Length: 315
Image (cartoon, rainbow, N blue to C red):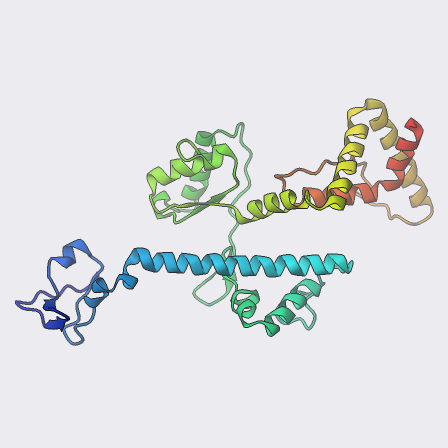
C-alpha cells in the first residue's frame, strides 16, 4: 500500500494574495509520496511552503545533528580532560543502568546533564546509540557475524568475502542501508573503493567514515599540540625503536624478562599457570590503530624494570 492519490474533478480552491490556487492532480506523478486529504485540504500546501521542501528539511535536520554531535563530543572530551587531570579511573565494575555507581566517567557526564538541559538532551540515555538496535521485545541487540582472514586486502577480495558472509545469513546486498569503514583508500575511494562497489549495487548503502577511527585520528593529531604529550610519545617511540631494531637489545630484553619473572614467581608476586607470564616485546603506538597508544604505554609499564636494565647496559 502506497500513498493515497485522490482523483477529483475539481479540487477546492483557496485565495492566496492575488489569485486563487488549488491542488493539481499532476503533482502525484511528480511527487509520488504526496497525499491529498479531501477532509482537511491541507497536504498540498506543503509544496507552497519553502520551509517544508525536502532539501530544506534535510538541511535543518543535518545542521541540528551536527550541533548535537559536537555537543556530545565536547562533553566527552571535557570529562576525559578533567578526570585525567585529577588522575581518576574512568570505569567501574558495574556500569549498567541499575548500578548505583557507574564509574567516574559516566557519573560525571550524568552530573553535567543535570546542570545543562542541552547536554541532557543528547547524552547518555538520549544518545542515538547507533551501534545498537532493539528487537520486537524492546531488548537491545548487537550482531557480530564473523572474523575471517583474507590473502590480500584488495577491494574485490574484501567484497567477495563480505558478500559470502551476508549471503550465509540470507542478507541481501540490495537491502543495505549504510557502510562504515576506516579512511584507507581501498575502503573509501569514491571510484574503486569497497564502498563504491557496494554502492553500485545498492544506491542506499551510503558510506560514512567510521566515527571511532575519525576520533582516533583527531585525538592523535590534537595531542601533538600538547608539548608534554608529544614529548612523552616521542621518547616512547625512541625507546621502542632502539630496543626492537637491535637484535642484541632484543635478546637482552628477553633475558631480563626471564630473570624478572623467575624472581617474582619465587617470591610469590606472580602465580604460575598455563598461558600466564608469557615473554613480551615493546609495541609502537600507531596513529591509525585504535587503543594502540594505551597498549604501548601499558606494555612499557609492565616491562619497565627489564627495559631499564637493557638501556643501562648499552650506556
